Length: 185
Ligand code: AMP
Image 1: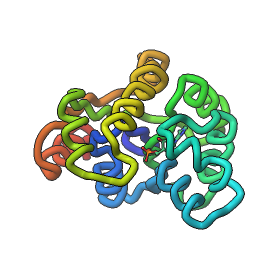
Image 2: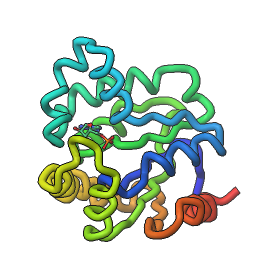
Image 3: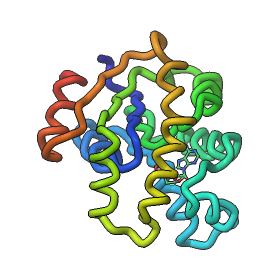
Image 4: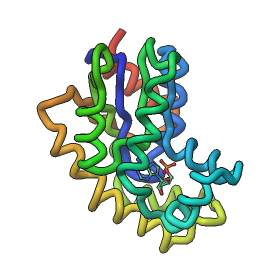
């Protein structure tokens, strides 16, 4: 797979944030986590943060147009020139289509890393992590949102981008190695 401008997708609790940070670091890619960006805005109490707080706390999705604007702004920054890894975006078919349409010049998407983890394992892991907002109900809601809104992105992009399906069950290092093997040198 050409491994320059990548997306990483996976259900909530699949470990995609951790893996994304590792892969980006090893390959010198800009790690763009929309969840981290929104949480930083919320922590800083910016206009954006106040606007999205209730949505994020409830495990729902921030409107597509706002997310697209945020990501396109970030992709305009110089550190993305060597490649980027988008983590948590696109989360809807509209975001995926909007992203592809908005990218221009040498910024084209090369591939998708899909982390696959069965639902039982996800709920177990999320409860073990014990974040204040991680009640079983919120966890199941986020999973539902993933299945309903995000999973269809894979079908929409099928055949348009290379995809590496990675077994996301196992030790963290083992999973990183699987991703590295799939991306190649
Ligand atoms: P994450 O850390 O990727 O799980 O994101 C945390 C929360 O931020 C999600 O549950 C959503 O409420 C919001 N969020 C992050 N990325 C997006 C996106 N691409 N579209 C809409 N909402 C998002």
